[in-house]
Length: 285
Length: 274
Image (tube, rainbow over all chains, first blue to last red; front, side, top):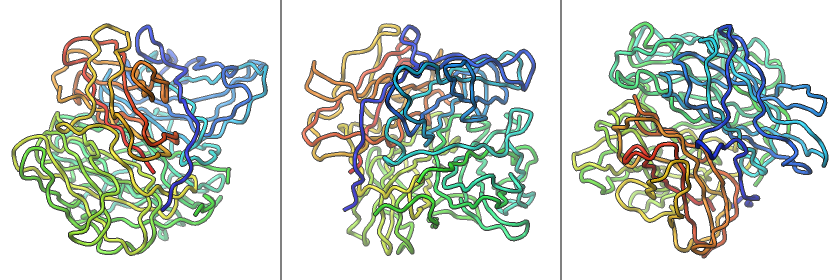
């Protein structure tokens, strides 16, 4: 019987604000689709002499019904912030309505005692100065009790959304592939992908079922690595903007082209369209 | 057996119906009663170490539980039971996705069944994608057990009465039957879908005798919106490696920024992986 070994507890949430039961609030720039200032999520000092191999991030309670993304960074003792996770998307449905969580197998190396600095967050939004609550929970043992790696982001656009994937005008038929990247920057061993509404939150189908394929290979010769990942919505929900995103195993070599395509059970323009952002796990064992 | 995560990986999908972009239908006939097992695969081609289970297409706005099993017809062995599928606000308004590090031997028959909270005949759809290794290379666990007392189609119900103040601990399980290497949680809204205001919550999972609980997970975030979904349909705790010895008592508590009756409700389903 398989039983991978257990890990270490407890897991604590350093972003929890017990005074209001919320997380840390990030504010987007006064210019739409522009990063706001970095805000400290938690001090590194509380994790001195320990490394962690996963980070659970939630994005919740947005102030605006608009596309938005969050970056996670690490600040060193010289007050320099280095981005370690880019463009975690909060697919939007409405203010105070949307929720996204990401279970990220990222390795953050052991920090020597006495190190100063923090894990930080910042956000951007299609609505200027919008806010979002963030929790970032470090987990000492990684996904599957295995080491994490580094995270790269592919497919994010300047409109705080993902790359658009329009499902076919023929129902229940795969559309053409849309390129996410012409060349993967590194070997990728797992992928998570966020799906956004491409600003359409007035959908009329009942239900609307959309599946996405993620594939690798040259145009016309794609090979599916993640098949038919389902999303469902209807006229009440308009878009499922309350989702948990976790990584799925893939084996993508550096230099490979990555593409996505969609299939939908209806053909209404707009209703059948979504956007995707891919997060790739690179490095590690 | 550990497979380096840089190694190749294959996938195998069962239950998806491309002609309608749907899953395989499961049927229930009485409130709270398990429906019949429905085969998703007669024999898996490969050994799976990670399964992405997706549930959608409920014909009635209700709470559902879904079981996944391996084994021949009439000898189904559940590898996970009572996956809580939230979505009371409307039929077919959202899918529920579960990322499960579970092992399925090659050649296994895979099946699923469901139960529903209402008395009407219910249908829901399921599909699953098996991968030959986990996202970081880890093998899957053998089985996941429920770590709460099943009552209706919700989990352990918590109702914080004082703003931003932790409730007392509420027992989830008096004594775990087995050793566990990881736990997972799914949160729901305790059937309340008429919320006046949203609720931000922080949830604790503790272990130990009553009044002597030690923290396993502290102030995990959760959120109920007050519009559209009305409950947290994708909130929970992913499978996190935590050691729990057999014979352990587990308890839960919550604090919330909303103490309005109904709005404040959350229910918690716990699963132990071994």
